[in-house]
Length: 573
Image (tube, rainbow, N blue to C red):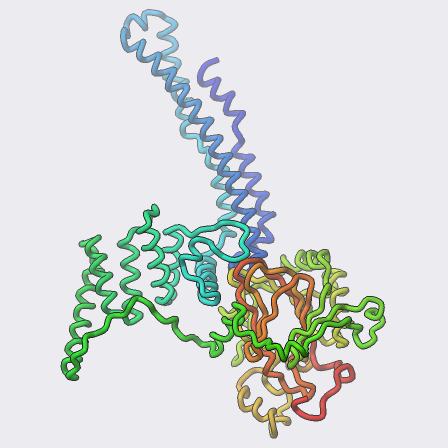
């Protein structure tokens, strides 16, 4: 068989490009669900699992391309070896070689037919299938927003749980099953993300980690000059002029032609000289004291930040022995509810005042998996209501995805709703839909109230606590007025997963921390019996350090509870 015939026969054994394209188109259907949640993967671990399967599919596609490419190169190599042997012989005695008519014919044939066939093989685009697959999937890849959000999540964990960059870089986190490390380039990406957000505190921490790993001999595409460029300006922004000058000089020693560094050096030197002149004018002899390279974390918008984060770490919990003596376990019959008389729930006091309780075995594993299955396609970035405009919007202090399930979505939803009604003794007729939430990387919900702080009736603003509420929150929109069911009287929170580390529900004003336990639920009243908000119930969902946190909750409203939870005689009842 001639070379051209051999190639044409063997080409039929290679995976067809047309077949590859057809398979790639089929992937569109699989990625349809993924496309519904194209952005903000970092806000839901449940949705990030889709990316694992997408990456696995790409690896398989890439390996198929490599096999095809290797087969093609093997043929080309075989042809080259054959031609090398033949031409070395023919070139040694061209006339003698061509004196044989068969050799003359074969030379003509090779150059007219076989070499063009080889050209076709070399030009054959065996990467078409892989490129088509990649193109289909790329439109569902995480975005720059996702990468920035993921970097911020790691920094949030770093701050909340007091982890230094070296610990995170080495992957030394509690409860982890898998080993994961950050390379020099990964750490540089963290620092650059912080820098782009104007977060110079974290820029310094991560750029210093990059230098540490580079000094240890780790190979990377990132150079020390690049790191010093970011680091010198970041420490300058933090007010450390001496160190900014020192780092800039180091940068110029590595890259004397660095134009920006040269300009910065002159600028820093001028600022330093100006400061010295000011001190001389003020007759101050003390030298400008250089900082030690340790910088304070900037104060942010959350007044109880330190308390909140310490509770997330399990520190500062005010569960004193005296309070513990007032906490009990019991079987809960739901005030004589027939269903619970037969099968009562185990109830445990988590806090005495306000009364917070935990119920055990509220949802089975099968029910949890079914609810997650129904909720997952509907998950969308969780929103908060802007207190000034009343408009729902995303916020950095709430990082999760949620969906709302109706009883018509699945029988298990109706069954769980009815069970919550039996346990609480409150009607679900005026309650909100079952909300299912999945927390993403460093997923959290910072301290907040579940109830609306704006009074529903302006006629109640003339005395006592109602006046205080009106004055403090008179500009806040009435979040639930359109529902016509009153304020959120109570919260029932189901834990649908265990969490290896982090993810506690904390109450900063109380000093209480409740840890997720799969199948359990916690319950508390948001309103006093008077209808006034119980401000002690301000609570938060701590960032998930390790694990995947799923919860569902039901918010009960005031209307319909008049005889199930009667009003008290005073405002503080």
